[in-house]
Amino acid sequence: MNSFFKDILKRLTVTIISTILFFVISLFIFSSVISSFVEETEKEPLSGSFLVINLSMNLTDRPSDLDLEDLTKEVITDEQTPPQFYLREVLDALKKAAFDDKIKGVFIEGGFIPSGYGCGYEAVKEFVRSLEDFKKSGKQIFGFISNPSKLDYLVYSVCDQIYMNPSGSLMLNGLASEQMFFAEALEKYGIGVQVIRVGEFKGAVEPFISTEFSEENKVQITRLLELRWQDYLETVCKNRKIQKAVLTQKLDEGFLLNPDKCIEIGLVDFAIPYADVLDKLIVKGIEDEESSEFAKIKLIDYVDRKNSLSDLDSANDSDFSKVAVLYIEGTIVDGWGDDGMSVGGDEIAKRIREIRKNPNYKALVLRINSPGGSVNGSDSILSEIRRARSEGLVIVTSMGPVAASGGYWVAMESDRIFAGEQTITGSIGVFGLLPNIKELASNFGLFWDVVKTDNSADIMSLARAKSEEEIQVVQNYIEEIYEKFLSLVSQNRKMEINDIDKIAQGRVWMGIDAKEKGLVDEIGGLYDAIQHASDLAGITDFEIEDFPKIKNPFDALSGLFEVKFLNNLHKSHSGTSRSFFRHIDSLLIQIENLNDPRCAYSIIPWYKGQFGFTQ
Image (cartoon, rainbow, N blue to C red; front, top):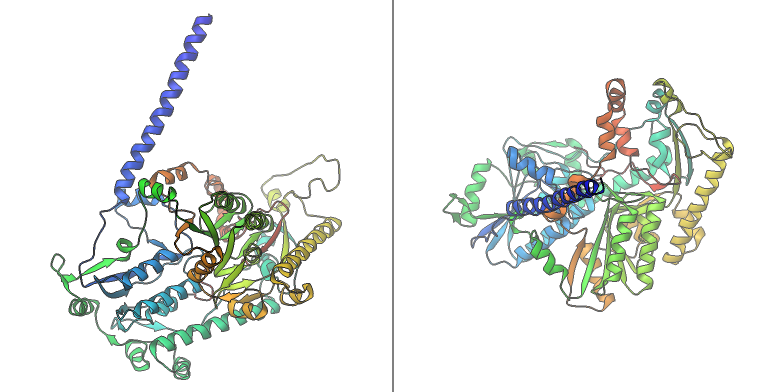
């Protein structure tokens, strides 16, 4: 009998080991296949080529992940997904093109496909400034538009010549911020929400308790929109050499402009079909004999991306001094994960530890594009930043389109804070959100019972509303966090707490105002922050390394085995409950990342990635 069990155990062990080996080998084979698909032969432009930038992309701050699901879909169905570029690689490509003798100029076409926190205004402005710098090389930029969005046209305004589809149009009708309010829907479906907040301007909770913006929130949003629209008009007028008063007057007469009107105002130069534009580009450059079109190279083929395992390994083994650029993009949540929509505080803290422990990294630049989120998640990041800085690592913050609430919190231990003129920042305030689904659950025949040692042992439960005494306890806690926030800003910005409180109260500021109020140090972009960090670290010859790093196919395989709880939650419901979740799906998207263990948040959820630029 003993030998029987030994034989069974031996066979089982062999089977398990064989399965593991087969799985590992399969992963390497699959990785090689995908790598060969991703790594196209390096393309060299013909002399006299145009760099073609198709705006049909999502321009993010952080490097995007390699999504094997999308890649597989492309292989099987030949259906192309919109490309995703991150800001720094686009800026680098334009710098490279400016000094590349083979590049004749730039041709821009298409229109942005924003998603999540991508295509933020300040990131697009950095892109525009980079195009302006490209023109200093003496090379020209041409563009073709049909029905561009306002954000698209901001980029096209840089062009030396803009060609417009004769059937096209341009609408410059101002900016708007639209918010969905859930108060009545929550009440209808039996979801209770109890709110604790600090700050006159803390409008973050309004979608859950109201049906409209408060007057205080309207004041700050109006200010942001007005500053942004004025900046937009001034940028367009400067690039197109139009007097602002003239453009404003014309737009008052009619904001939906046909090609003739655009030419009359000076917003475009010619109204001709796309095929004629292609012919003109042959004359301005050279003809590609293979395609019989103008010689060109696409942005995707021109950017420098390390796709292979060997490239990444050689970069990691380098003994060069390095400046790490760490991206915090999306809502800050408690825990792990980073997908561009939300980012875990523990995930960012782990990356900072890796950077801190590697002596090759002499400086760290935080690039923040976040409206905030969990207080616990934000403080986890700040604690690790504080530790790294105490050990001598230079830390500089570059604020992108938004760095507010928790996004401002994590910037506090920096040696220097850079913001764009149009960065949305501040929002120094805290709120607590205590939902309960007791009534909702009862409608589905679901009930809870509890046995407890103390009255408030189940205070964090979703099964009941909180008592007035419990609300007061949480209120005291939220006020303590607000005082901590004020103290944190006071210490690091060298300002009195009373002075901070006057510009805090949850109020949001534009970067240009934040500089005046002392909330940031300098107006500048990502490369300004990188240069300052290297200067502080005393290094002149260094490599820049991004975190998160661009995934190679093998790394991305792990994504296939991740459990997406919320996706499974949506898919698992049937019948009446599925119908219910469809009705409040937009609400779930907003609250799915509210996972702070003490329900304390510092966030502006009304912020959208393309704030103000509704189509």
